[in-house]
Amino acid sequence: MRFDVVTLFPDLFGPHLTQGVTRRAFESGQVEVRLWPLREHADDNYRRVDDRPYGGGPGMVMLAEPLERTLDAVKTAGGGRVVYLSPQGKTLDHARVMKLMEEQAVTLLCGRYEGVDERLLERRVDEEISIGDFVLSGGEVAAMVLMDAVVRQLPGAVGDSASVVEESFADGLLDCPQYTRPETYMAARVPEVLMSGHHENIRRWRLKQALGRTWLRRPDLLAVRRLNEEESKLLEEFRQESGAKS
Ligand code: 4FV
Image 1 (spheres, rainbow, N blue to C red):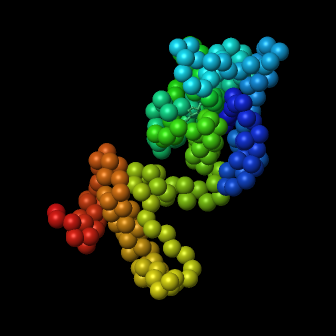
Image 2: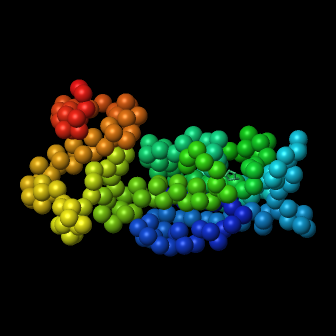
Image 3: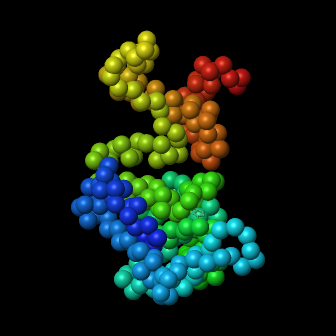
């Protein structure tokens, strides 16, 4: 898979590509990242990439032309569909991550300032994606979030691919609680079932906790997920035990 990143701050991406679980995917060539420094495509001798907004108001807006030229160069180099990271986009979720993972190449357009001239977006952007309802100082960190979420799902990208399959949202539920040494921490013990070695009981406990947490914290996720018989029974047990009226 290949990411082409159009950005005013290419140096922001270095550490992200060379550390952590996704490092191997980048270093093994399973994932290629090409950084396209926007200022290199600014034609006037001031290498302008932004200007004041028509209609007045605070801040600056990114000029269409330097972006158009950069996207031309990316396309010529085999770049893929253009994703603009912005608060106006559809919020990124697991389903969108899994779809993006199927792409051969994705071009990530990172905005700065107040945003990008709308005419460029209309002409060259295939999709706007937001990482959440808040405003960042730039699209770069949003691009890193998207790349991290997608790369982790690539086969073998993360050491133990089982961990990717069993984590939050992979099955539409939040993750169950996790524990490690010591058995007792600040007088709190690890749930006995997890030290029982009884894999079936452990599986059911984890599923019950995942269902219960999702019901408590993200009922919106349960609203769009059909529960099978075992799951319905486990969730009912959890609700009873948490004192909820059935
Ligand atoms: C953002 C988000 C985001 C808006 C103005 C960059 C900033 C500045 N991108 N999800 N939320 N972008 O806040 O993706 O240009």
